[in-house]
Image (cartoon, rainbow, N blue to C red; front, side):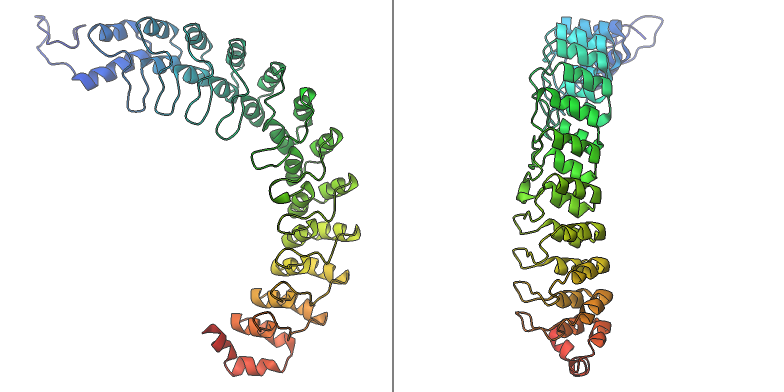
Length: 422
């Protein structure tokens, strides 16, 4: 083949042939750049190929050469007029691509020729973020030395420090912290440290910024996160560094609500020992006891009751901890609450008792325990329905039988339940 690929070859030692059309020529040019074949790439340029031509993904020759680490090709393309900050369809520049691939020398070449070190892709990724994510320490160092900002976050709120911490890249984390003189990149790095129970990272993060209650987008603090995962070590550190034990996140949820819901008894104990309000309420009126009972965490429920949790507390809808334990079919929690003398016929705003709830859900064992505690099988809800009506309507005959109530025959055999179904 001739070195003049866009012409019909007339050399006597070759057959005459028409070489590739323009689309194929563009592809050949891009392949040459990706392969690091500078001479061939320049030949295509001399014969009219657009230096910034892209493939279907928006990748041009500079992007491809940068990814593969072809420094000479990158330098020459820039010299020939390639747009150093041209972006792909996802918004990635050549610097993004080289940083992600860990091509340090290419990164240096691009930055030297004016590449924007703080350019953001469609998702908000910067070259520094990408280098930190992939643990490319040398690239991170160079970008920091040349003006990269580590306070620029992705659309999800993640900074380069956060992603390095999440990925466990300790050296990159240390480097970023050393260069964070203003302490403005904590979010959500401290939350990640809390999730991982990483006290070392958490301590480092709190060195320059003493705010242990930095909030996530949803208003949760690192202590909420530690409470969720049951990470005692980092929770203790956060509390020792001034974290508010009763910090209210979205919907007024406190760390104690979170720990109770998750059944983290050791965390519940720690928070209570540090002064957490045992009667804290969410916007819906949930107390930690509600949370523990609803999730069936017997040990947490017992601890809260022994420490004076308000057993009569109700949500905005009038639900008590007993209603919630019943709804979840958590027999042991129901028995604990009854042992602590919770009113067995306490009602919601709609006058539903716990027995109504058990009858509706078909929780026979719970219903039996409640009935044995003298619950009223004829208690009427606001709708006029009794637990027996509800059980019959839902087809839970075993519960109807257990009430041993004269109404049983009327309901079951006179088609009262059928009337309800209609």
